[in-house]
Length: 519
Image (cartoon, rainbow, N blue to C red; front, side):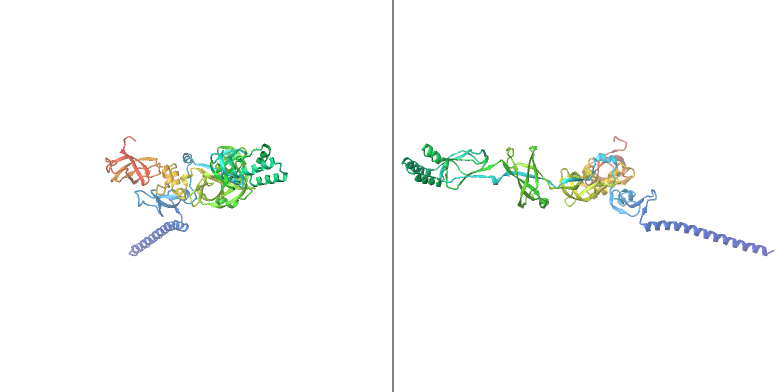
């Protein structure tokens, strides 16, 4: 009888031990399973290097404070800069894909316009400017062949227009008197023809014109004056004498420049100097009358580069029989090539020249905007040749690209602009906004309600509600004051409605009033 209680006790001990062991193994297995799941998830994250937002399931590149977008964090938490939680930046919001997106409505508000890159056969030529000049090869010189005196001057000043055959000056030549009297005496004395011919030869040697000798034979009157006339219709470009002045043999009295033919001096950019050859056709128009065209072919390239304009000068002759042009006129010139060339063209307004490079904003197939460095060539009208960086059929931004004129604006300004119209977008605040975008948005103001936490002479700290226009969540932030004595009635602990704007130093309060007052 005593063995039964003993046996029962032993069985109870074994049963308890069995249950305890089963519970231990079950608990160990459950803990191992959970731990394994965590380890597996952690291993997947560690092995792939991807961070996943447990709320959305999206891939996260990093976390940041929207007010300090340049500082990145590897995990979520509270911002060390503001009283707010760090915001995730997802891979599909611009960090992992080239370019950024802009809301279509915002594109219309910003006036963004697109154009298509296209290939076109154009003449192998370029546009330039030119000026008209006298054709120096056609200038005529009026000289004196004898010693005499200017008896009368018909041309009064340089640059006076003159016709062919018009008188320029009357010259009195005393030395012509004696040989003419001698000739008349021989003729009256009935001398033979040999002596008369010798006298005529002497007069010709003294530069007496044949016409004057013939008149002497016919009239028997001595002439000591000769009129010097213009050999060409044009302009008296030089006048070197005055009435009463003595002249000597070989002295230049005047120079006459013709106007029927003019020189056109074309300024060739230094970069195109090697592509210009004599014989290339030129079509020139005068800005005062674009309907009139003057054409010609380059006759020669003048040596030397002008240091002031870095241009090479090409010279050609143009017809001016109608005398519509005068020297010194500015002409629009189109230098044409000998053959057509296929060029990839983009609107000139789409090219952003930074000084070190040229950039075009390209619209990708998914609608994102991305800056592309291009090498530009010649200009063809309102378009520019793209030597590299673009492909035929690509879409580029033709206007409004001043807002995205650098890669910095593509990474900060455009995401903030997109976030201002779409819910849930993470804004990137004004820490790295370019000058153009800051100027464009300087007039924008925003308002919200918050509690005054701290007031100093320079700024006010608010714990404010979200600002949907900027994509800001509720947080505590400090705003600068326009002046040290501004808002004297604002005290810590008050709940107010305030208006602020972006400034060069961050965000500045422009208006503060008690909550519930007029907004």
